[in-house]
Image 1 (cartoon, rainbow, N blue to C red):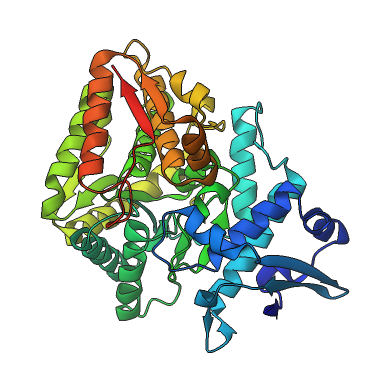
Image 2: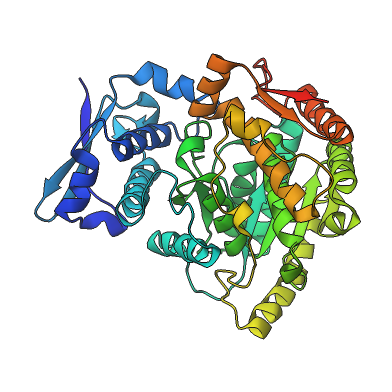
Length: 452
């Protein structure tokens, strides 16, 4: 048996006995199991993996223990994967991320109920709770720079698209803009990697590479090696709200179901009439070879949610410098809007997010088949239902619980208006053909069935 003890880093240097007990009392406790699994995923940082079973199955003998000391707490790793070590020493970034997991899960587990946290609570309280979690993670810097660019896109993209995400990141870095992503591989890693070079050229010393994830996705998308600030949110809805409230601009690269989910979430909240005056630059971008992808996605948005939805974003193909310069030029507009509203520079309180975008959606067969996928409803509500449909497909593709449900009960069934089902089927089939559902080289078995 191989074990290693880690000293605390950052804000975790002191823990109460109650906090330690909440994790270590029972190895069967839900919070402990989530903690163990998240730490195991972090130890796979940088691995090109999108199947949670490839992480968990080989490491049944992995364990993690908290060792309470009068001066603080240590973490003991038992039989950790060799990938996390160089010449017998744990990589420092991995060390930091493990204590970030401890910090966030303890805060969620002791202050909120961990399973389906905040269900049934009103919208302002959820927004305040997301703020509280981000503040506790010390990622709300209060610098007034308004330079955090959220980058979304697929973990499964080809080399040309990946190199383009790096070029966009590089151009953003040259303009002293910081990067926030879902922290995994592919389009989540490329912008961060590019930005590090741009920041280095400008001698920009405060480069931020913020990764925001959640327990059910981290194993399928382990943090990439560039992430220097890691935050674990309790579920996908709080994760998405954290992204949009911290963002000063959003860049969307090519992707699959997860990227479609993020775009539909963003469009759905921006269609709310109370957000009509919001200033939040949204750019969809990729290399020239991705032009067809964006045409398909734009067509789907237009035919389902209308011209108003299409007007919320700009598509820039094959011009990384234009993407970055457009965001930089609009930085002053974002600042002026926040000042006019008296809003925070670091957390967009004035953005209205309705409960249907905030409360956790549990992707199981009953909930997926019960989605309202019909045109006869307000566009924002249709966007919410479409978002949930794609969220369920993500769960069935890569999340442990979703994969298990599909294996036991077959694919999720989606049904609704025939025209809408045709549009969804066409878009999803294009994702499959372009290998956007799994990492290249792996065979994709659909976790869904569209019934027309």
